[in-house]
Length: 582
Ligand SMILES: NC(=O)C1=CN([C@@H]2O[C@H](COP(=O)(O)OP(=O)(O)OC[C@H]3O[C@@H](n4cnc5c(N)ncnc54)[C@H](OP(=O)(O)O)[C@@H]3O)[C@@H](O)[C@H]2O)C=CC1
Ligand SMILES: O=C1O[C@H](COP(=O)(O)O)[C@@H](O)[C@H](O)[C@H]1O
Figure 1 (cartoon, rainbow, N blue to C red):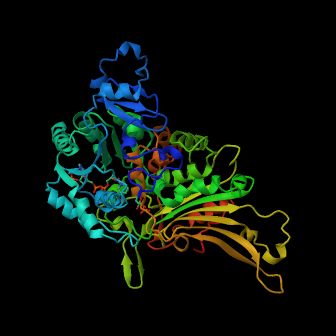
Figure 2: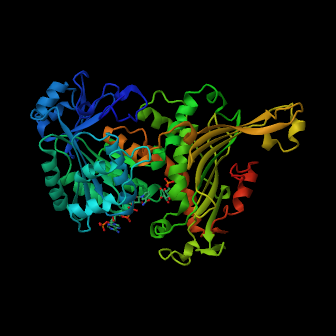
Figure 3: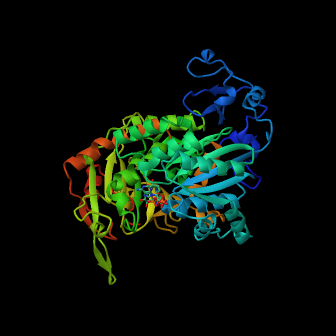
């Protein structure tokens, strides 16, 4: 399957793109007979939805269609021919461009992740022939200075070294910079002019990546939509987390964005959804007969979602202190994994079908209870002659901060499949290791014939499926087997799919997949607003209670396994954390 070039692997599951080519992604393919045009009177573009893609056209060219016939803003269907006619796209009909504007290009995320991911896509021939990248921020920079900044963070993968420096040079030539204020329609108007020059009269598709602090999201969306949205192609906006701090602020953000954008122009990114093993979760479950029948309370004793980092907030304490680990990791990354893990089989692999199932899981869950949560904060620790600082020693953090850098929680899904099964989450910074895992502990074998060989500790003998999201990606299943020989000794072994051993290809960064999806209009891995609302409803009461009651976090030494409280919480539900021996 090819999208932009035969070399670019499609990130779609389904044959959505089997008939796609670069131009087809941006035009209604002639073979598709009808499209429906949804007209928004307040916006500068209309969204055209087909079975599996959405594109936007400007309001003005279709002004002749009588509005009174449209009912609730939905126009009668028009054929692609009519569409092209009314949209006046006759000149360069076969050609389209994509302009990607990284708003906040001078910042950490842009340098660390976005530009390198765009380069990787370029290297893989996954960007369309006509594309331009613009950096936008307040800092004064020339194009050359932006290129210099970007070039410092570009790398080629070990298996992709061929022509690497040539490719980098070609890529950098497609990168430009515009300095402007985030709330200035004039400055975005200037950007618009520059974009138009690069687009050269082709059908222009525009993607804006908001790599900026959340308090300026709406300013940017307002200015960009008024002054720099595409006049004849689609306009999409990738929004980075945090999407608010609680239900109220998140709803306010959604309302603010929706003043200027339609829901399907908003791509709320959770980069964990772009990670290879998170993508593989559904494949593992729904394409292997051996797993799906076991995927319920009948066979699964508990599920553990574990995130740990072996470094502190270093440098990001300012942001982190007003959010804390529950908002930073649990409410989004771990909860998204949980929803994918626990959802029912979707009707199809279409984005809406998957997101419908995920939201059902979230809405079946009970809001978190304080008694099911443990919070911690790292303190200074000296090891091997090196002293590691406490969280509150970070210069950007108030000395008396009680923001949790660690949390463990027990969550429950009130539905027939998962009733009574504890889903335990654990997330922490400055722990002993960097690792993200999903651990599935199965029930004990009833009437186990081999009890004698295992002794009284039946937990040791139960099967455990581990999906190691990172690092060193792997999926392994702990099983019991006989030690070869004349005796009858049992042993624990791993059936191990170790990615590095199985595949020679390096795994792409999550941002590559997600950027490609946003360019293609694939929404499966982005968060829909109802999912976001449901996620916040689970965490908001707890977050408020923690703040109102000023719950002091349990201190744990930098580099340790976190507070002991996490073990008591697990024990309350007869669970032992699976990562203890790791
Ligand atoms: N960094 C990371 O690893 C991750 C970041 N994120 C999210 O991505 C977004 C960007 O993150 P990151 O790059 O770290 O952010 P930065 O703090 O580096 O900010 C990005 C750019 O925004 C501008 N900016 C910063 N603060 C302000 C302000 N108060 N008012 C106006 N402009 C400001 C600056 O550009 P200039 O001054 O030139 O205008 C800065 O270079 C944030 O929403 C963050 O939460 C999400 C996951 C990981
Ligand atoms: O979103 C975030 O994620 C990073 C961890 O991402 P990873 O891909 O490196 O695992 C985390 O450090 C950061 O605090 C958080 O905002």
